[in-house]
Image 1 (cartoon, one colour):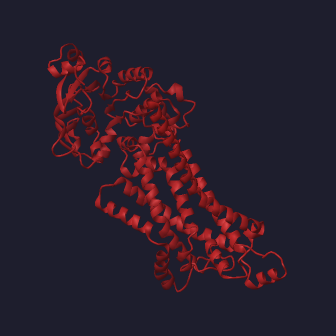
Image 2: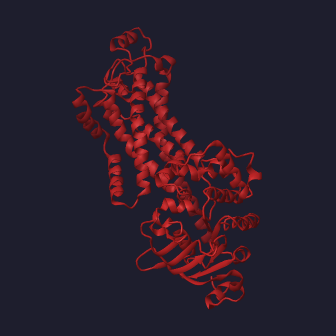
Image 3: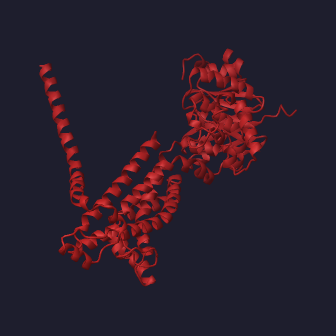
Length: 255
Length: 288
């Protein structure tokens, strides 16, 4: 029964930047464990805003208000400490952002350093190897682990950032257009990687790329002007969209 | 017709270019004039002993002038005094300034930090002579005497706003993604600042510190009220102490020592220029 219960659930989630305008309007959706769910929609539809709310990134900007509930295993994260939430919900950003002053090893272990958790040498080595292997970066960087992460190519940097997020063993991994700054080969690498990763972590990904959503996700959300227009099986949504707006977007008449 | 117009426009463009170049060159003239003057007059005096020996007494200098010899002695007491006071000022000003700058960069919209930011601007604009006289009231009077401590307090007050500003500006231009990535890993704001943002901003902050040092190293007025001066090398921080800019002023006031003015000036000028160039170089390297 455990696998039936959703791991992450948006319940009438609203996000507003100003009192008048809502960027996300009453979104309700349940995300299944160990799946990849894609959030699609034209620019400015609120998809990144919704994703960032699930990591409490809005706490950084006092003018942003989030209402409703976001439940992680049934617990409302909006009333939890951001530090605890972010340890369980990892995030990968659009532009690869390895910490420029840290080596590859330190980048992978950054989450532990930032949480003040001390690891033994053996634990450190084990974590670095496990995480880099799970993003298929180990073979490429195992001899240069002490070099700065910024020396890597864009695709490698993004995989390093994914490894860094995985090192904290999160339940959910949020990805905000993780491949939009990468070339097609690096993109293919990361897409393949995500499909491997869904065995251990639930992935919620914002993407502009419909092909990408179709290739990797089992479920898709379509958002338009802050509303969740349609949410369902990716294959069904692409073949027989229920809403006229989804249809317009998928056929390229909108966005 | 169109051809004529084109010609006219090209001509205007050329004229404009010349005017701009002319004014750009004009700004360089004072710098090179000063550098040339100090170099020509001070070059002779620079020698090893100029940096290792202390200021001669007026009597010794007079004797040397009468005998037609170069004035003996140097500015070692001033160099050591300057270093001691700068060092003490920097030890306090650097951490304080960085913490304050970090706070301002993190909380740009809060009323308290806006007030602090405004006060920092005011402090930066406060005439150094006023900082000197106030430090005199605060430190010299209660301690019943001039001292290196008093001098370094004055220099600290002058350095602080410069370090705060440079830290704040450097942190503000870091990409927001760095901070967000740090927080997304579950770090609290203090740890993200300490382990991610400040290390990433190190180059800019270090440049700022160097510029702050080069800015206050030549300050004379505040030291007149606080450090006073001293003709021999001294390491005790509760006694009057010398400094290179103070020496220049003393040499100017003593007809027998006037020849030393230019050597001391040249040293100070070269030191500041070196610091500035180092800062520029580091900033460039850091930006790559």
